[in-house]
Image (cartoon, rainbow, N blue to C red):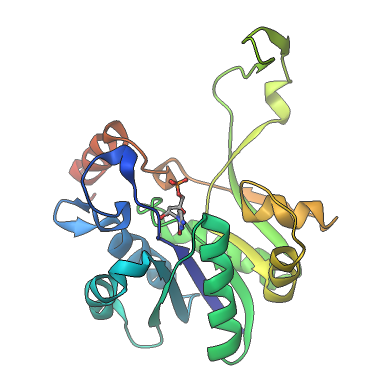
Length: 230
Ligand code: C5P
């Protein structure tokens, strides 16, 4: 059973304002992407990682990530697409074409560079147990409001049934391919699969798997590293 992780890392990352793709922004000297790939391989469940890089940075990303390949883990780099979903689809097509026995696929944002390996294991194990789509989630700490176009509150969903979604999201490879070929649109891969009518199950996520989007998030990441044992 082959487990392949797809890492869409082709965004420009302008909100961080570093003048380089977000995936290459270093935290304590190590690029976010390198940290994300390291975490995937450290799970012991992932045999191949396919990174979708900004088309103009394929060589740089290959150089940064080549040293991460370890016994039993290979790193591939392909050119990403215009939107995140295009980058995922290009990486998925590469995996299905080039990596024999690809049966479980994870989709993991490079921006979630500090995702603990136990979250990766929990997702893979749930897919291997027969769930075609699995996502790591956290409870919602804040009350969430639905508003109209004028910012006026129209509803207050019960917080107890809401979850914040993280990555890696795990899928039966054929189901993810079907979702990407469907022409449907969603803000995450599980959303696409859900629209096919496939059940999506949840496993516990982790606070460290936060998405690094802003300078504030980078400061939090540096604080994570400064923890004892960080
Ligand atoms: O911009 P945002 O943080 O929502 O992007 C989520 C992830 O998708 C990032 O890791 C980013 O590099 C990736 N992405 C991509 N291809 C794009 C746009 C974003 O792989 N065209």
